[in-house]
Amino acid sequence: MLVVAFAFAGCEKPEARQTGTDETEPGPVNMTLSIKESSWFETGINDNEPVIYNPIEAGDVVFDDGYYEIVVESVTEEMIVLDVDGALVEPNSDGTISLRADPIEHIELAAGESIELVSQTMDAGIRLIIAAS
Image (cartoon, rainbow, N blue to C red; front, top):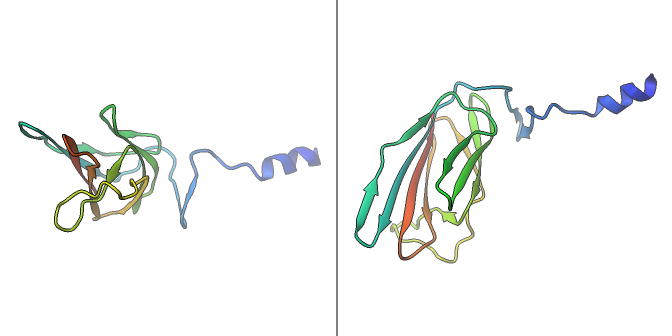
């Protein structure tokens, strides 16, 4: 009986992963995530309306266009942590795109913060504005 108690003592609930000092809350959290996508190509720009997610929870796929994917890793009422798959970077201060920058893989957004990401491409691409509130 004592062995069983020790075996479960180190177990952690999968929905309660640590991010810094805050713990992910189980189930949907009343935090809002907004993603505005603009795509550009040789003949013009396609500017989409923002997609709003509320409530959100760990595991939600909030962006997937076949090339880039963004998944909610964890969320609390104060912070959203996102995993990014694909070659997305922050643009330079003058709006240009660095083709040599390391792609963003992890984003932490507190309520009220936003980030702009662009694809590392030259012939066509996307621009995302991701905001938490």
